[in-house]
Amino acid sequence: MTRPLLIIFLTIFVNLIGFGIIIPLLPFYAETFNASPIVIGLLFSVFSICQLLAAPILGDWSDRYGRRPILIFSLFGTVVSFVMLALAHSITMLFLARIVDGLSGGNIPTARAYVADVTEPKDRARAYGLIGMAFGLGFIFGPALSGLLVKVSYTAPIWAAAGLTLVATAVAWFWLPETVHRAQAGTGMPFRNLPEMLRRPGLGRVLVIDFVYWGAFAIFQTTFALFTARRFQFNASQTGYFFSAFGILGAIVQGGFIRPVVRRLGDKPTFMVGLVCSAVGLVAATLTHSVALFAVTLVPLALGMGFGHPTVSSLVSRAARGDEQGRVQGAASAVESLGRTVGPAWGYASLQRFGAGMPYVSAAGFLLLTLVLTVGYQVSDADVTPAVPTG
Image (cartoon, rainbow, N blue to C red; front, side, top):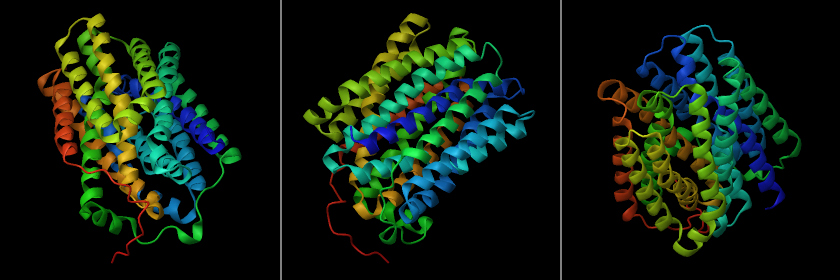
């Protein structure tokens, strides 16, 4: 691993420990303010709506002014949002904290653009696998820490998340080198670029795939806590530990299996295998009422997500030219945010209306739709072709 990749990995890893602390805790924390399942879903969705608005701008700025300052800004915004969350005394304050986090939430797309800057197209799935491994490790240590600290209070894990994200900010500030030649980067208005990108056949299709995929994943991720609470009577601590175990599976897949599988099959076939495995795991999870069997269903689900996350990111990056990686990653983050907006809102509404199993059944359906969309997609390396002027 090169030094820039090592630093970006450490930065995202520490930040995602904080993120991993919050995700399984937020539904239980919101319930202390008498939030209904739909309101909890909106707490997840409002973050994604704000990220949807901010991500194309942050992506364009990262092309203009460099990846490093945008990444630092995003991380610091997350610190502020966690402090607001810990000090909240009302549902309104919870929403304000999520809004601040969403508006500054450009750390992951900026990290992806950074990876694209320092790697060749053929190596990106492996490099994105490192970010995926950071996700996996963040969801090992974060939920486990949440499960441990929630025994003190609901706010103790949130303060820990703020502190860890502040450490990630410091790592980026002191050790992360810049990659962008600013005089040649960033042209045009980001929201003007987004419709143009969606009209480009290859890029537009992969962005739609990106949207549906992350919407399905958001349903699983955000409803996990209430699903296990209603199906298995888990509390916040048990949910944190179980989420941590799922993170271990994801880290094993993305850290050990993704490279040889992609080398043998390629990005697109690996992604499709991941979609099938995830759909099977979700349907199986819906049908079980045993904790032991539920744990077994997480194996194909972790395998599918471990294959899917880095390869869908690689497909997006390969559909973009080298001089527009920041804008394309910003656009990808925008459509992913739209998926994460629709996913939790649908997931919690369907849980409240139809029961605990419906979110996972619908998520499996969205993954099968993604599979259909992927079958006819032709992979190309747009960034190795000459830039074509637009407009």
